[in-house]
Length: 298
Length: 163
Image 1 (cartoon, rainbow over the protein chains, first blue to last red):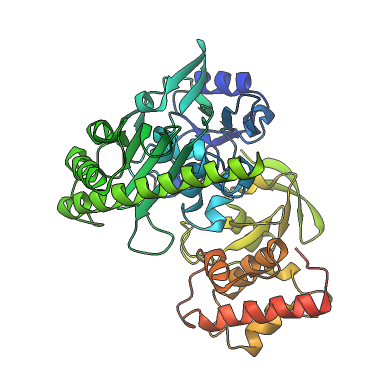
Image 2: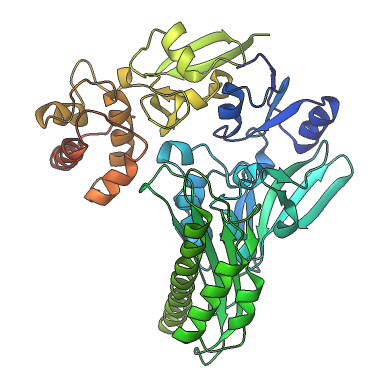
């Protein structure tokens, strides 16, 4: 790695000041993306700002209304093991839990995953499906941006100069909601998603139709993104096998994958169709299970 | 510009001056002569450099030495107690879970951490915990058997697990 100056501020304000003061500064959280690029000299910042010593960024909490806040310093491993946050954020836990290895997950952060903005980021489809927002702090103050608007291109985010993401916020899960994430990889672990699908849905009171649904695709477009046409097929409808198949086909059409070392675009499209159907079924099962548990504990 | 850091490695306090770009792996090997952790890839893929940072397994090649300031590091050299091998180390020998030995320090670190968190892991859980430790020699089966045997040993003896 090229030489650089290292700072470990203890407040968000200090971090912003350092970022503002240097054109060529990079933020260090887990380091599992940044240090790789620095070793390969793809990124050669003169200043590295370590945000892990800022207590405000270590928050992982469900507030009174059930809104989930994941601070920028929270590791994938912390999320993977946060069983008590599970309901209804199962998809986020699943996404965080498949990244790399235990060693990687002990360092890598969820916020780092979305800031790296790879189209294949495993936490992105779950967060998109669950309607997450990104809290950004910078010289002009604080702003909240929908995650959908945060991804602007492969590896590119809407962060401006001097800005950093302080947390990801996920709205509270309403009753009768379920979520799931599934991906296809060549290996069992230590692999990047060839295609990934995240689904969150809410069942109607009668439990037979889908009041609300969100389907998000990963690794099959320049950014992780919602499959809105596929959602329209199912919103307000009974989730029959025929409708699921139609929605899955729709999602596959909405994907615009590329061919690369991992797969051809045609194979990726085929994966989207299969994964969409399976993930909706998993989210449905999740919602039903949660409904049962609620009745049992009532 | 070198920075002064205080860190505890295998229970011993160190005051060191390190350049920011020095990785924890390089610090351990080059400055402290703890050469048990190996650089198999330098990219966090192989796990040969696995050490425990505040008790949790990490790839030392992707941690800057300065990030270890105020933290506790445990390497393979800190696992045996007064020359007595840890059950994981003993089991790897007895079950043929080690051939060339290059991946073994990392495997031991990951396995020790696993058994601290999950004293009776299933085969699937062992494989998942070791997904970040690549082995070219053994084909993994004997490593898994060794970890299972070590788990049994620890349960029988109820030894305090070091880490």
